[in-house]
Image 1 (cartoon, rainbow, N blue to C red):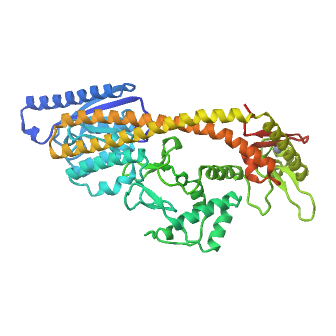
Image 2 (cartoon, protein in one colour):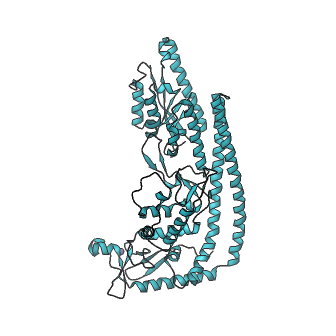
Image 3 (tube, rainbow, N blue to C red):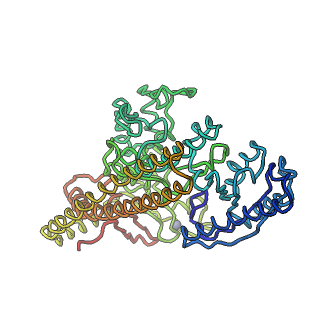
Length: 531
Ligand SMILES: [Zn+2]
């Protein structure tokens, strides 16, 4: 079971809350107590069912609370206040009532509790009769416009169904995010699918090309601005107010880091508890929903990875007009800080210097200058890399690599078939779920039947989705191994054939270089030695 942040939680501290409704207040004391008793039994039964459903969870009854309902229009009831205080003390994370009217008669305030207060306190609220479950409901903010028009009960049920479907769409990689990113537009024939928007595509390609040539974000932004390339919000004819027509480095960065350009659907980076809550939550990467190959790629995976590599190596450096091949890669062996390169206009040589020493001096940093002629270091490093590359080529038995590739290719094909089958199953299950909701709305099936069928279908769906995830995981592993051998060969060959190595090749080969006080250079490679 997951709470609203989609974290896995294993201990469910639940409160059962019962209350007499307006009609019951006129009845005899005996009837009243029977009503309360029945409500509690129903809630307890529900919990028993939950226990079966979530066997890895631990259910703890925190309290059974009951109010007589005389003060039902306000939330000033004694036991209700106890409930509030227990939740505020974080002693409970689930509240269950027989029906919604038990919570309160004031609809606005009741809604507020369900849609805002409970979710914000990470409390799952369940109302058995109306089939309300805030755990199922509070999925994401994309659905907000749909909820807003759903004031009536019927519409409300429909919206829940749509919301759930949305979540499934997202899991199977359908576009649900509104305005697509630069370079894409929504497919006219299928609103969940993205297609290329040619003008934007050109700009995106240009940005990636400029980044590969090791231009800084600022520089790319400047080039585009100077060329009067329209900024994304102008391209999209967005209703947003256009403040500036200058490209910002942040916009460039967002584009360069967006995996969507490789044909993978990345969604769900942020969430809101629900539409009434303003709090935006940034989810960790493991919780993003990423589906591979859902639309045409603009940037191939290799280019994308290369740009991310350059990003990483440039992270620590300040933008200056001189760029050295090994800038940002050399680290101080003694203090582990970056080794900078000092350029003197009036001198012919450039020198390395420990950046920590430069900033704080010997006394405060405890480090020394690490001052060496940069050009000499560079040529020593390149010579050493070259020797290692030659050794690599010598040892590599090409025939073995080809054999391995054949086997991996077969495995890959099998997995792809399985993935296709899974996608089809999921589509069918989704359609079946939709039909059942229809049947329920039309009153063809009873609530009990409905709940039973839904539970079993959802289990099937969950199973298929887990399978899919596993297949994708395996597939990724195979593709990685497959491309690793090819890649290393290519990089090594490139390095040996190219006359002057560029920064990209260096960051592909080298993790870091350490330079010590006495001038010893250690090179840490990214690639593994030949197997
Ligand atoms: Zn140092």
